[in-house]
Image (cartoon, rainbow, N blue to C red; front, side, top):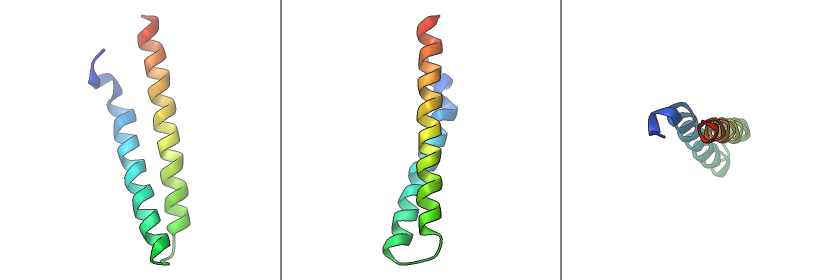
Length: 62
């Protein structure tokens, strides 16, 4: 099991974390689109974790 297999989920997770942090900063500063960024970041993090779990299950079956 190499890290190359988990490249896409890891990249998505990092992007989601960045969006969540930026969205939280926008909410603190009362700037527009803070809620949208928080929602998008959380959704992307969820997708990344879901993809990672699927890849782990596929690797474990082999």
